[in-house]
Image 1 (cartoon, one colour):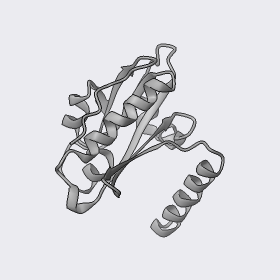
Image 2 (cartoon, rainbow, N blue to C red):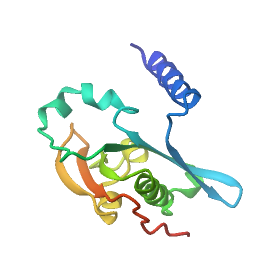
Image 3 (spheres, rainbow, N blue to C red):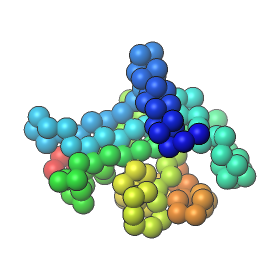
Image 4 (tube, one colour):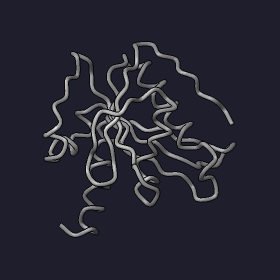
Length: 158
């Protein structure tokens, strides 16, 4: 599959989720201007990770909890390095708590570069209580944390 085909498939898959009312995401605004986005959702909504052989090699126990994933961030260039992605993550965790909580998984980048823009950074997830579980590919790690039902979190407004 070419990059263009993959992009088109991703768009179609996301549109299908939205059309079915099964898509989760956080939009971050500066007053009325959207400046950031954080994608999250239950495992069933974001299953592509399960197919990866690196993921399958990691022996994971969900401890009977619902599994959620934080998979993607996008921040307007003018607002990068100002805590926008962190704010989106905080809001996603708050929303997960309101939806019953569970185990939350993330795949942040371990080196600076384009990947960090999409997956977030290890320090951002550590600041929100995530713990390192295992290496995940050449430049990412798998991190997890538990979120209790009703978790209110601390969404800081900047």
